[in-house]
Length: 177
Image (tube, rainbow, N blue to C red; front, side, top):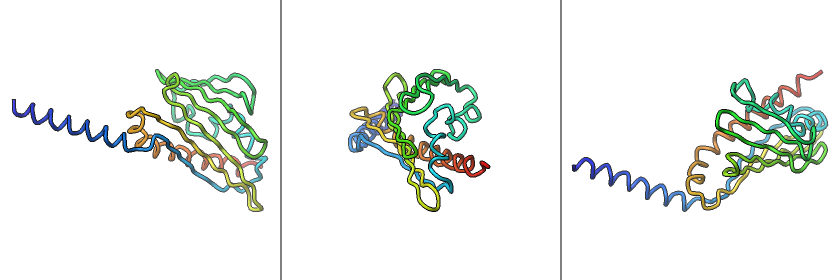
């Protein structure tokens, strides 16, 4: 009986600590990575502006996720281009909502029927040495305490995915004739 009481107290203390930690966290979050690619923005832009090309350079593809199924709707590229995906019970919709030729795109990623909404922006800043590609993701967990706690693990994983994606994009672009 004493063991059960100790376990209950420990679990209650853990739950209270988790709630306090979640309440003290900012509901808004952001992840950003950048990479210099030795190519003009016009060579890079089609890869970010055309969702059908994303599996060539992002980590979200069949090589990394064999069960991933993607379909495309709307515009071929730019504003209104939509990628709908599902992998098992996970489902999502990615839609380009803004596109400035050779400069940037913005998109919205809706997962779990709106429970998780992520905004993204990929921008290109050209210089004489090439193009700085910056990929940003951000969101607002609002009052969802579980989402706030999940962000602690989610942000480092997302950052790693963005770094790998930009590295793959760099290799893809610089190996072109």
